Each structure stands twice: as C-alpha cells, then as structure tokens.
Amino acid sequence: MKRLFDFQQNFFLNEVELFLRLALQDRNLVARMVNDCRHQGWRSSILDGRVRDTLGRNCNSLTDLLDEVGEGTRALRDEFRCFEPLEEAHQVSCYPVDFKPRNLQAQT
Figure 1 (spheres, rainbow, N blue to C red):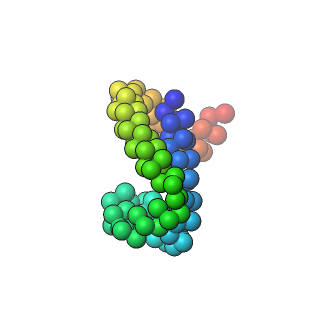
Figure 2 (figure 1 turned 90 degrees about the vertical axis):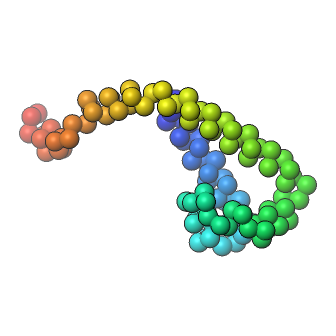
Figure 3 (figure 1 turned 180 degrees about the horizontal axis):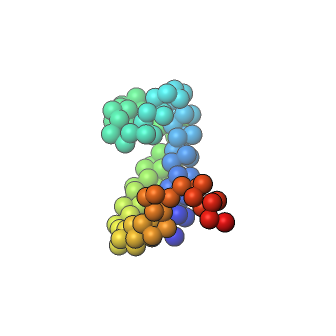
C-alpha cells in the first residue's frame, strides 16, 4: 500500500513539474523548486501570475485540487507512520549489515 502511495505521489509531482515548466519555461528553476518545497520561487508573484495566465479560468480548480491533495497526502503519511516499526523490523531481518552478494553466491 505504501509503495503504491509513493508511486502516486511521484506521479503527481511529475505532473506538477511538467506544468511548472510550461508556466515558467526555466527547467533549472523548476528543478530547484520541485526539490525544495521552501524555495523562494513558490512564493513569487511571477509564479502566481504565470500560473493564472497559463490556466485561465481553471486556476481556482487547480488551487482546490492542490489543497485536497496536500490534505490527503498529509493524512495518509500520518496513517502510514504506524507501520514504521514493522518496516524497520523487516529491513533488519531481511538486510543484515554484513550481507554481500558474493557471500550469497558462495553458499549456493
């Protein structure tokens, strides 16, 4: 379930990145913004204006959608936290620190 959530989150982030490229037409700026949610570009009046120009009458719909996705993502992350101890236990039992692929081959 968490893997599917992560996949969907990455898919959505890719869509946001493609839209930002269309609106800003600066791949480097977009890459920095996508990798840093606190980047100053997110608070830019230029971004706001270009998003509004690009989307036109659909701008409010996108704002509502982003709000809903953000709320849903936060809620799911909170729910997934209860599985963290299980994931850590699984990683410890399945991936010992001294594991090396050649050790596995030597045993077969």
